Image (cartoon, rainbow, N blue to C red; front, top):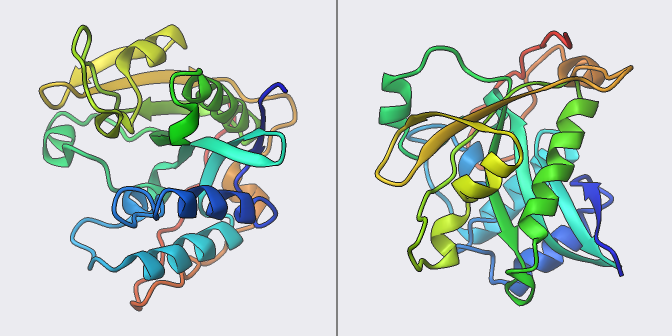
Length: 225
């Protein structure tokens, strides 16, 4: 059966949650929340992160291309506006050489342990880029690892590999760690695409539902040109 993709949304949350629970919350109970956290934000446990993620999904403030094989989710590629995903690795080095923030970030991948090595991550990234185009397009950054010629645990490659991004047309911008690159690509909007902030009709920042009083950041409106 060919792979298909659907956006992470309230309707696909159960499939997403089943995949995360199958892998014990992934990465020690992260629930794919790490990149949503602000620098210095208090850390919580797996159950709190689950509820935080679910709240973000219900608010339309957590994005991923969720890959399906039949009814089962087998992986995803997380993406979102920069304000939605403020927490990246090697942040100090990243900010030191920063010129302008991108419109979008691709921050991580997760693939079912039984489906790794089958091209699911590459498919997920392509579907994420299609969603970005549908939501207005713009500049996209990612932060893949380059371990060319080395054997490495897949847990070190949750941000993808440099090779897969270069194959998708991304170009290297700068290096921010021994094996980590900033790569960039501009995505043209689909005809009739509506910028994400406009489609949400945002007027106030929405609460993320975490056990703190801190609101989630406003997603800036972007030009679709």
